[in-house]
Structures are given as structure tokens and as C-alpha cells.
Image: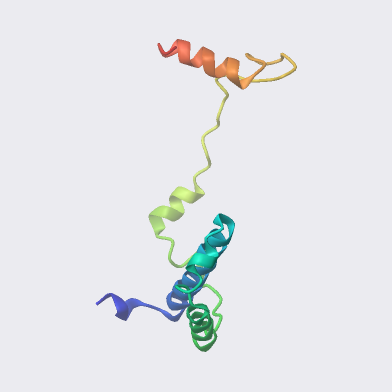
Length: 120
């Protein structure tokens, strides 16, 4: 069952997210000017309950364990991928306002690219 795999940190994250979502909705209602209409439907008790539950659900900080400079949850194949240097990139075109590149504006570059690809 899924709930057996839930950690205290997961619970803390979900509760924090729920509280943030509630506050975001309340802020949105105020900005839209409909808060007064929804006030009877929205109870501050919900945010108080979530806040209380967050304070009761104490999570002891445990520093992450590392292996070869990576957190334990990063798989060996992913470590190898992360250690691979990025390929050297070379710009196909340069946009420079001073005229030192291929184009002076982004619009010119986009228009030229569109024409090359058979667009506009």
C-alpha cells in the first residue's frame, strides 16, 4: 500500500503544500474581489488545523548521505551522466545590437530562420 511508504518528510511536504495552496487561493479571491462572497465558505479553521498538524508532525533533520559526491538516491548511471562534461557548443548565429553578429535584433534572426525553414 502506498501509505506505508510515506515518510514524515513526505507528510510535512504535503501539509506545507496544502497550506500554501489554501493561502494562494485566498489571495487570488482577494485580488479578484470575490473574497467577501466566498468568506462564509472558507474557514480559517482549515489553515489553523493544517498549521497545528505541521507543528505536531515534527521531523528531525537528518543530513543526507552521499556516495562519491552525490546523494544516495542518485543512481550510478545518473551519476555517470551528471559527471559527463557538456558538449562544446558553438553558436549558429549571433544577435548583437552593435552589428558584430549576424543580426542586430532577435526579430531579424527569427524572421530569417522562419524564411530558411519555409515559413512566412
